[in-house]
Length: 511
Ligand code: UN1
Image (cartoon, rainbow, N blue to C red; front, side):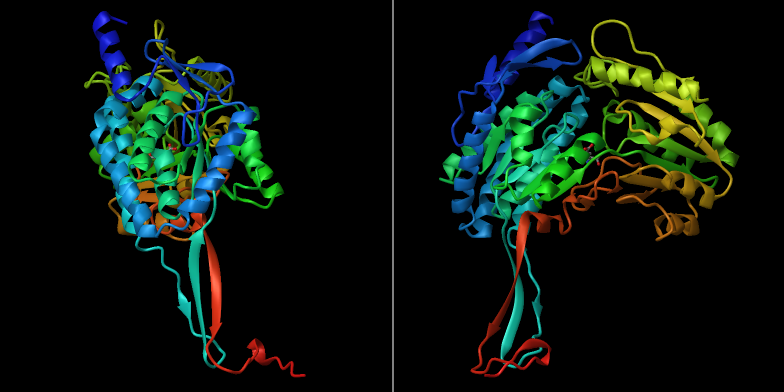
């Protein structure tokens, strides 16, 4: 690092309250944690940025107990008052947007524009949740009994466990936290050990907003490993909901642990997202969209396009254009404005990409472009295009790297069948100018994913919709629409304002 970059980084960290060594748990105050120290490594330079002392299971216990106490107070605040606290949190994030966006880039390597976009996603979530705080509606029903009234109401649920991944280190917390907060829940955040500093920075901001409002410490934090924090939290009966983002393997074990105690889980797991491009599609539009969706965030979004289905009439020319476009992408420092692709998050991610490509070649794939890790400092790889066929088992796996498998098809029905023939079901898209093809893709017999787009790539969803997917993606829905319901408990109430006691279904029970 040059002296200039070093001093910029130091003042950036200082502006967010990050010290060389930071406590890894917050329960209303910062806990003097006793777990091992982890270093946050900048994937661009491979240098440590700062470190965090992780939480032990005893530290987790403190955070959980505080979260229960905070919930007991917070649930009695009127929802619009809770919304006002979230509004102020959104304002604080606006104030720190530049610094936070840069910290995201520094810590996990996505380009600065995407780092800033991620902070914007948090701000958008805050705004949405403020509105929601006045719209946590229940329905009213007509009772079958005379002089009876029936309605449902939504109450706060309890402390929520939020497990997030490195790739969206702050936005996914906001999807959960902003909504959970207006719903009256407290929460405990277990961020990825690869991105602990962003979690500390956000919690410090949240702490100031809570204190300014004399609000209970609903935004708890416990940075720690699976055994010290993850396991006790998923098995904790005081935590009615665990919302977890990560791999299918992780989701499977969390889902089991939570189901064992009959808790609720909200899982947002792997994607293996496909784009179908028909002969009649606008090729320029499709090219730009594929590029962002496959190469953006260096292929490390759960919504990244990993499979491309080209109709035979345009396949050869589209592939040629794609190769040219890939050639123009030079992985480089994500802080530079001209960079479109930064590094992968760590050395293991580079190894996983190499392994997946070796397997793809073994299984009959042909590398059309890229395929190499870039020598030198930083976890840089080439964005890669692979000509593939649907018989290759590797194309059913999610590898968190910029690998795009390309297939060809004759008829749309065949493309849809191939598109759906993977275990994951997160995001999908079709590029076509034919309204019939578009509607077929969106029909019940079309894409089987939680997200289906027309003439838009698979990534970069807006927060207003419900986000999540089917099959091994886990079935959860977060962010907009009526996703708030999972953070609350529904209560059906029947009130008798008469003097008789008629029973439902005409049952008679007179003494
Ligand atoms: C993720 O990768 O876990 O739709 C979330 C998108 C982003 C969120 C991705 N808004 O690509």
